[in-house]
Length: 109
Image (cartoon, rainbow, N blue to C red):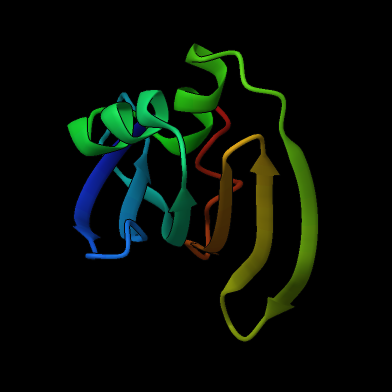
């Protein structure tokens, strides 16, 4: 999977709004669109978020940051979606993902 940051804004209060597409490497097809609100109190994390190169999960793995996951909601309003939070030392991410109708079938070879 490739993560493409399609929009990101850092507010004066240090909070971020971030929008990404998760795409297949082989075809570029968008499998998931994600929106996130980020509260970040760590310089190392801010630096990688500001670079807009990696997905949030990739950043947490690169920095080896212990993370807690909590699923808040799941729905299927013609499109499967989920809302969850990730948090750990110095950060809180609120993420909503909307999956393409054929998201899971396109992952099979």
